[in-house]
Length: 115
Image (cartoon, rainbow, N blue to C red; front, side, top):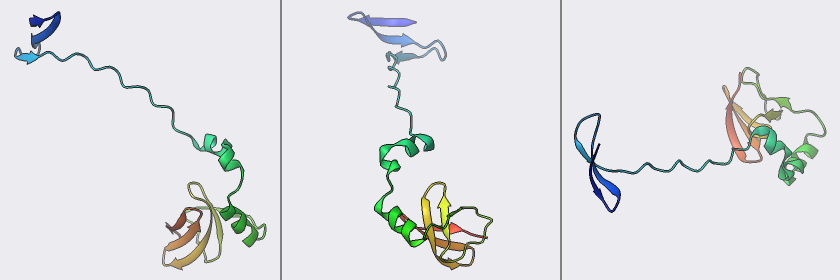
């Protein structure tokens, strides 16, 4: 219930839940809708992704046309192996120590798990 009005705008109200007097707060406008995030499929179609980077060209030349194996945690990766990671892309195993491997991707060296 409205308790007082100033210049046509409610100033104080009586709360219907707790029966206390509160300062009137107008409803906040709904936040503006954000544009949808790019999905993996839409990133693959972008013109930037269509042309391989110089890094990818050099890596492709170095592995001489052999196919990169899709990354799997349960696979044993050896030094020099080429992998295709779903997030990082094409990479080459640089070092293996126990169950961890260091892989060089375009974004830099990443440590991953190996069987």
